[in-house]
Structure formats: structure tokens, C-alpha cells
Length: 75
Image (tube, rainbow, N blue to C red; front, side, top):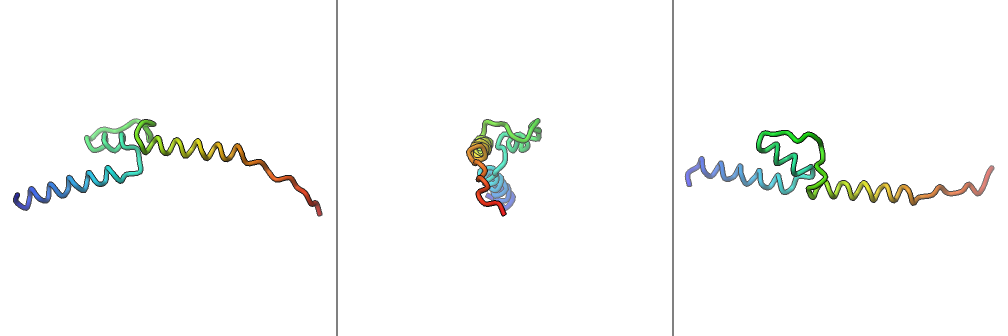
């Protein structure tokens, strides 16, 4: 392969690595790659969105299970 083909292959590899490492919605990233726009910030179906939703639910569950400590000593 000549230098131009190698450069293109390197750029494509970098794009693939970026997609694999991205922490945002993969559906939105894929649509952006093809010049389209996703009408939201999270699709709710890709691995990153599912992880974010699970973390939100766990946080809410923890908040609901925490009870305020009673005031035991008044001065």
C-alpha cells in the first residue's frame, strides 16, 4: 500500500478505537459518523446508555435507603 492508503487505514483505525472507547451514546456516535443527528442524548439501548441508566437507578435506590440520623444530643 502506498502512503495515502496507509494514512486512510490509520484514520479508520483511530475512528474505530474512538468508537470502542467512547463513553457516550453509541447510537448517537454512529449516526454522527454517517452525518445524521440523533434527536436526544441517550438512546437507552446501547451499552453506554444502559450502564448510565443502571447507575442512576442504583443512586436513587441508595438515596431512598438512607435515613437521617436522629438528633441525640441537644445543647
